[in-house]
Image: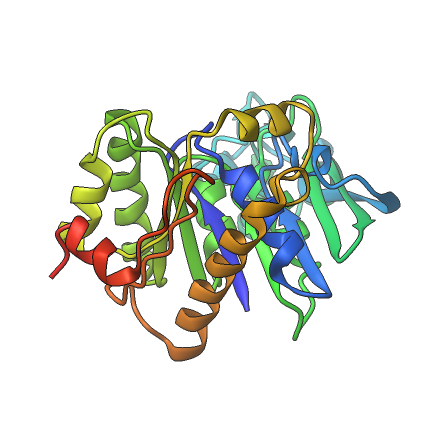
Length: 311
Ligand code: SF4
Ligand code: SF4
């Protein structure tokens, strides 16, 4: 099972859900931090570094003695990473996607490829979790190739969580493509709802089953719940606005270790996801699971459906 954790915007609690779910998911879990511009899962899953691999992409190198400045390469490259300039062509490696197209269209065979480093993939062990994270070099702009290098560390037959970058752009698509299920993390605010709508459109376009985790319940309003109810989107877990969670987060601690009463809630999230990935339920399949504050009673799934206006 490959599970992706995504959110329409940053700061919603995507990391919190990823690392805590990884801890309770099973005995041998891979957590792939694909937020390669700012990986932070390692702050919560301390462990021993195992290896570091340099990742490079092939970028063109022009032999000026062969190039006549015809401009074919520049006309082909939709990223403007190579342009003819006078009698030769200039390459901007930071903008190159490494597709190799310019090499193929060059009539003078003046282009060969050379490796251009974009970052590293680091692997560390933390209890039941093997954490693999990409770290983009400062100044490097091409995160999708590094994300692909991180995802190449998926192991067949082992459960994996992909912690996606925030937003709905190319790096997010690169991350969640191929996942069996996507958990969208949001918060019950107008901004949260706005970005959740974008994220829902994205996963529907990709035709990946999904559900929602609402974080910091209690800080805003019920618009996210009403939206999910109208759209038939299952709310898999609600995490209350609990000051102790924020304190544990600021200390770099897992909720399930600092506040053991939350273990059962993340285990129910695990079961809700497993149920959907094993039965092939789609995004209208909804079983609600609530991670309530210790002082708040849990409601059952039927009450959740009524409360959220689902049919
Ligand atoms: S296509 Fe080849 S010959 Fe033409 S400008 Fe580019 S590198 Fe030079
Ligand atoms: S390899 Fe592809 S992206 Fe890079 S310069 Fe050539 S055509 Fe452009």
